[in-house]
Length: 139
Length: 139
DNA sequence: GGCCCCGTGAAACTCTCCGTTAAGAGCGAT
DNA sequence: ATCGCTCTTAACGGAGAGTTTCACGGGGCC
Image (cartoon, rainbow over all chains, first blue to last red):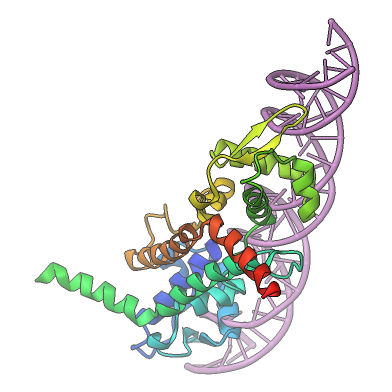
């Protein structure tokens, strides 16, 4: 079960926007791309998906760019992944009527485990964790 | 995050063998394949992987076939999946040094959630659940 | 208008998944 | 010994998804 780099790019992008959410300026695609070594043109596609998922907002023109549509505390890891991948956990067994019910229940348990954990992680925590860690150096 | 049909086939095959584990006869590939609508030649490859993973044993010749290498209570869902897919949960972020530590920790949490749940499911439970369910009809 | 940025679609490429084919090797019966 | 049954192994190829790049369109601000 391997995740795509797309999901990695997506969470990095959201994290980058979350960090700048307090400043009220938009962030350019190029900036995020350069910061994390993401192919800019690919990042554009990802950001569009995040936008249609209601996670970020865009602004064109001179001082254009992207910003979060909601505060980082209200955006979960799971939401971001679902935005770019559809269901977070999917097995061909779902949708196969011949799948024995015992097995279907197993897949459900696995799916719930991932989705539960993913929706429990919010980006505000990540920012806090990072700044907490930086503070450690000065104590 | 989409699982392959291979993983579905693998757990079905192991479940089929687990059900017959008390009878001391081997089960042919063809039998399992027909039972679950799995392409026989593909199932062969899967069974070989399960064999080299130490989950099943094979026997050639006239009364040949496959059987579990261990009792169903000692085989977990996770083991079967790992056998055919390598790591149960993998992100490109693992192995990317530029990945921020906060994010790496997120991926770790998700991985632990899946692996924990998967290793908690043993095939004996599945057999019990199924027979329990059948018993319900007669009460 | 001219610049800067996002928006969109499509092409090319790589890689994995899925299933098939075919030839080889162990076991038992005749 | 030979034959039939079954697993063993390797290789192939079509299909589809993921990744990246390119080119052009369009909105907003000076």
